[in-house]
Every structure is written in C-alpha cells, then in structure tokens.
Length: 452
Image (cartoon, rainbow, N blue to C red; front, side, top):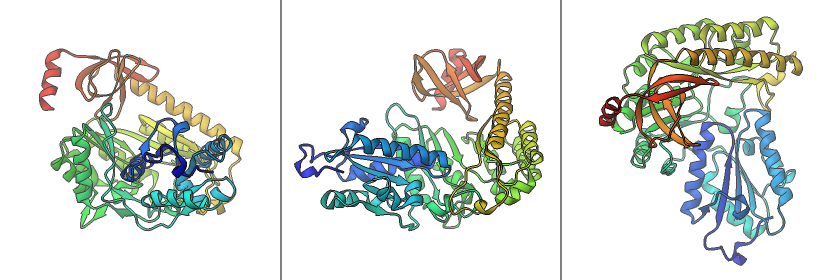
C-alpha cells in the first residue's frame, strides 16, 4: 500500500492526516509529529480521504485503547488499495506490538514514542521500497528543539511536556516498558516553549508528564520549575498532570500554595482504597498517607479541587478491598474520577498475580463505583449554586461559551463570549452536573480585564 508520490500531482505538497488516542501526552506529541512533518514540507489535512499519509498515534495503557486503534487500522486497510495512503501506527501500541502491526495487521509504518524524528525518512523509504518500516528503539528522547505550534486562534489552552517515561513500575502499568525510563527536558527548553505558546495566544498552560513531580534537570526539581514558569511567563493559569501520590508531599503543597497563577485542580490517582491492593500494585503509599496529603492540601491551598483515577477488579481484590475503595471515595469526595476495570497488560507483574477477579464481578463493582462517584460529582456541583467564580472562556459551541474555573471545573455561559476572556460569574443552576453561570456586573469584568 502507498502510492509513489513521483507520479502524484500533489507530490510537491504531500499531505498527512493524524488521529490521536489516549492521554494528554499523546495529544502533546501529536504536535511534535506535526512539527516534524511540516518541517519537511508536509501539509496537514483534516480529511483522511485526501491524505497521502494516515497516522494513528496510539495508547497501550488498557486493552480497550489498543482494540480501538486496531479496529481503526483494520478499517483503513479495508478501504485502501494499491493507490491508497501510507498507513502508520505511532506511539505506545507500536512500541508494544512492534513488527506484528506490519506482519499481522498490515501497517506500512510502525514507530514507537522515541522514533518520531525519523518519520520523514521512514515514509520516504517505504515509498521507495514498498516494504514496511519499523522503528522502536528507546533512546531517552525528549524532543528538545521541537516546539509544537500554538493550537490555533480558537484555542487558549496548551500543553507542554516537561518529562517522559516512568520509573515507578506499578505492577499493572505498561508505561515504563513502552516509554522507557524517566528523563526530564531541559528547563530552558520548557520556558522557551511556554513563551512560544503564550506569544501565540495561549493563556492556560498544563505541564505534562507520566509523573511530573519526578522532574529533575540540572539540579532543579518540579517545585523549582513551576516557580520559574510563573516568574518568566505571561500565561494566566498554570496546571500540571499527572502527579504520583508518593511524591505529593508537604514541600510540593507549600510551593503550590505560594503561587499566584497556579490553577488549583490536582489530578492525584488513587487506584485503590485497600492497603493490601496498593501494596500489590507497587504504589508506595497507604490509604492513610493519601488521606493525609489530601487534607494537607485542602488546608493550605484555597479552593483546591481533586480528581483521580480508580481501578477495580485488580487480581485478588475481595469485596472488603473494594468496599475500602468506596469508603475512600465517600471520604474524599472527588470532583471527578476516571474509573476503570483492571486490564491485563503484557510485561507487567500483575499478570502473574492470582487469582484473577471474575470479569462480571469486576464489571458490577465498576458500575457501583461509577454510580457512587457520579452522585458525589452532582452533589459537589449543587453546592456551587449561588457561588461567584472566576472563569476563562475556552470554547464557543452551539451559541454557548464553555469556560473553566481556576480549579479546573467546566461551566457554561448561555451566550457567546470572546475566547480567552476572563470573567467574574455566578452559578445560577446545574445542568446535569455542569454549573450554568451568569456574568456579574461589568465593573467586575473591567477589573479582571485590567489584570490581563
């Protein structure tokens, strides 16, 4: 598959289509891929039917994510013919499945997370030889010197990668095997990237990494870095994701409490409320330590909001273990949770832990957990009625403004407002569990505008 562009009337301006799956890191790295290809003369198209190269940037954290990407790949192959586009699989699934994506599923390119710089050459080699090209060497890549363009005039939020890989080896997690060990980007590169985005109109920056609290570059840790970002950038809001609870300590909390532009919405994956299961997961904290850290942060950081990840059905999980998780959810009252059923992953230690939990039982536990958390999310939203919130408009949809609070809650304004505008609002209703707000008097808006 894959047409030789020498016979293509559009050979001077080859096009590519890129579809991303999975986490924020993948969506950030989509920008890296675009920058690499555009530097070689490729033009992005939003219509896959007009693309010379179709790329799937994949996730391997859960089996479901791989299944979706494989289904998409199969669909593309069925639609294709000898004059069809070159089809490439990038990212974590490429690193996990390697050559089998070419030999069994027909991918023309298979490129792991550290191989994106080689994409233009791999595409050229495939065109010349019509032989699948693979690249999955892990080489400590941080993509320094590549600065993804601001996401466009209709975007005011941006992502900046500060580190890649992970050293934690949670027993259920494939990330260290497909993304390699922790390595941190040079802090000067990070500050430059933040400046580029800010100059392009981005006002809300999220620092991303598998575990941002493990950042360490030239003697600077995460606390040093986030203070530098606040000191030397013009962005209005600074966020980060994801933080490992074992590294979320008093020093980090004190640093965040002292920042003026930190958006106090913290994603802190719990995974389980059972100490026995946490130990089997190799998480390096207890439920008591997690609760203590939540309370420390709530005492020090005004309006702090917590979201989390929770897994049910981990091998050997009993009903008692599961009830301890429900108890933690009830105690902490997260604003939102990403909730999943355990998914076996190759290479991980959890594969050897027995007995496994029956899939139907695990599903039942997940349903009960979702119901419990959804009720909490709705109750938390109801408590906001009548409260004044500072929000920033991020999107216009169906003649409504979608805006975000400092602590990462989404709200709706029932009329369009300028993108990036920071407004003082009041919650007047809850729709589903989303707050509906009205703009307060114009004097409040003027005062916030002066701060911009």
